[in-house]
Amino acid sequence: MNRRLIAFALLFCACLCVLSAAEDTHYISLFINDGAYARDEILPFIESDGKYLVPLDAFDALDALSVTQNDALAAVLLQSEDGKFLSFSLQNGQCLDERGQKREVTVYRYGDGYYIEPDFAAEKFDLSFATAYAQNGKLCARLCDGKEALTFDELLNLYAVHRDNRPTLAFTIPARKTVSGVFMHPIFLRPSVTDVQKLLALAGRHGTTFALSPADVRKFAAVLPDILGAGHAISYYMPEGESGAAFAAEMEESNRFLFSLLGVTVRTYVSPALYKDIPKIDGYFAKSCRMHLLSEDLASERMVQMVLHDSPSFDVYNFSLATDAAARAEYAAFFAEFDKTENLRSMPLGIAAATQ
Image 1 (cartoon, rainbow, N blue to C red):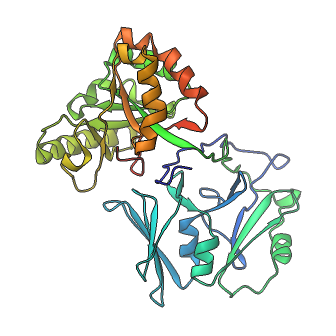
Image 2 (cartoon, rainbow, N blue to C red; image 1 turned 45 degrees about the horizontal axis):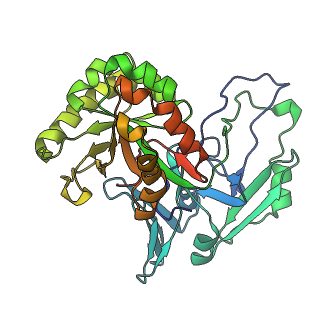
Image 3 (cartoon, rainbow, N blue to C red; image 1 turned 180 degrees about the vertical axis):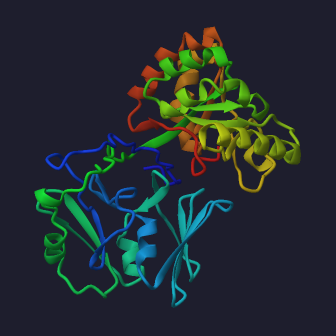
C-alpha cells in the first residue's frame, strides 16, 4: 500500500431520503463509552477489507482527549491532558509522538473527516476498542476510556431500534468500501468549456481533476456543478514563474465567486514547477505536476508504461492530460491500460493528495 496519505474520497452517499415508519432506519455504528457517537450519521464506523476504521473526531468525544485539525499545516493533532500526543501529517503519511518517535500511518478520508485504524492510538492513550454485532446483523464499534458502566451487549440492547419508534430520516449509506492500492491523480490541464462534457464522458468512473486558471473560473459556471456532481475535483493552475502574492489574490477572488455560486472553495493549486520551487501560499496546498501527456505520449506504449508503472516507484503520482481532440481520441485506450494495472486507482486531487 502506498505509504503516503491516500486522500480518500472513496466513499459517497448512496441515499438520503425520508422513510415511513415501516421502512429501513438508521442504526448506530459507533459508540463512545455508554453513548452513541454524536456524529455517527455523518462519520460512521467503517469496516472494510479487514480494516476497522474510526474517525479521528471520535477521540475528541472522550473527556481527556482533544483533536485539533490544522489545514494550513495539513496536520491533525490528537492530544491527552497528561501531555501525550500523536501528530498526523496528512502530506507524508507519518505520525509523530511526544517522544519524537515516527511511524508510518495510513490516514483515510471520508466526507469531511479523517479515519485511522484505532488500535495503536487506543494503546497509546490507554483506551479500549471493541466490535460486536447488533441485533440487525450490523457490525458496530465502541471506543472507551474506562468510564463505561455497561457491557457492549447491554449497550447494544439499550440502543436497539424497534419498529414502533423508528426515526424518519435514513442513514447516508457509504456506496462502496475503502480499497487498498496506489492512487494516481489524472489532471485535465486548462480544458476549454466546450470540452468539459466530452471529458466527463471519457473519464467515466476515473476520478480526475480539472485544473483551471483562477481568472477563467467564471466561464465554467454552467458546467462546474456537472464536474463536482460526477465526483471530480477542481484545482487552480499556476504557471511556472507566477508571483505567489498575485496568484493568491486571484484564487481568493475566484473562491468568492465559487462560494457564492456553489457554496464551495478550492484549496489546491497545480504547477508544472518542481515542488520545492512552487511559491507556498498560506491556506492553500501546492501540487507539482511535471508529466504532461500529449496525444503522441498517450499513443506510445512505452510512455504509458512509464507513467503507470515507473512513476509511482519514484513517488510521482500526478500527471496531466492534454484535452485537444487528438489527445481525447487516445483516452479510451489509456484508461483501459490504467484499469489493467494491478492495484492502481485514480483519484481527484485533494489537500491530502500527493504533492507530486
